Image (cartoon, rainbow, N blue to C red; front, side):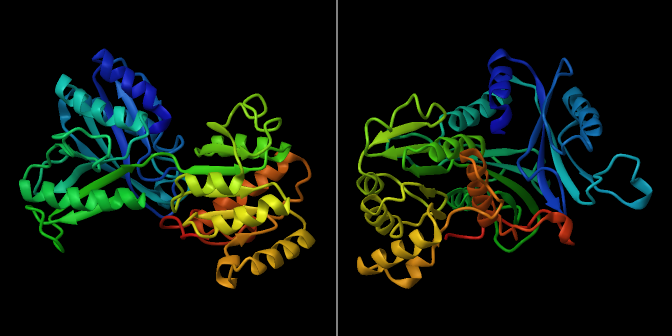
Length: 382
């Protein structure tokens, strides 16, 4: 959704009817994950993608039918030997896509409220009925309570058709939102647990995860650029005013001049945050890493040679850090790609972050068999 957010907001504000196709389930290999979207407006203009081109043509036709009044539909695409040259996924997987229209002003206003929250980097979950006793395409948006909310601010808007179903989905959506998970949930017609009468797709939109880069060196500039490209909100921190400047880090979301450990102890770090320590100076590294290892950060990578790493471990042990915490360090940082330049090193660091997040092997895909895309979500913290 974020990749076509400006286009969708423009259509809502301009009163342009459109149909939205959303990937709601993936089985096996598929080019796009659940939540990927494609929009088709009344003029036939297309933005977004649900399969990287495999089934877009057929989805376009379905979207036009839905926009013309055919009603919301869930369509499935896969491949078999007989379908290899027809509409199907050449990668061999199966995807399910919900196609529904935003033809009326009220429908677009409801969606615009969700889009505004996403644009403001505020957490929100959108639940949509796929099948069963409730009406296909019915929507409920759920957001957690925020400290900035005024009294009476609604936590939900829309409905799935029954009070009990709304209540059950609201509870589950907030849990999924806290975990950053998206997927299909099953309920009874009135929200009963452990029943499979109603399928509800819950798409969560959490604020972008953070990348904290410590050490304002050339490698940090390259790492900040690739972090932004991967969708992280990037902060570069260094205590030296001459190095920590906006001019040197134009792609970073913020550049902070502070002692690294002091800044880390004062800022928010959650289980999606990645920390890259590129200073390789003991007076910065040791207090910074001691603080970092007390956080729930998903990844803590540290630059330096193997000799530097051994010396760093000894200093951290002397500072009272135990072996279980030291095992969380990714050091020397990055995968073995043979990197030399700051840009190549940044790719190596990014590759290790991705590998850790999704549980990849780091080996060439040509040497492996089985599914290319690893199932499930992030593997946990490091």
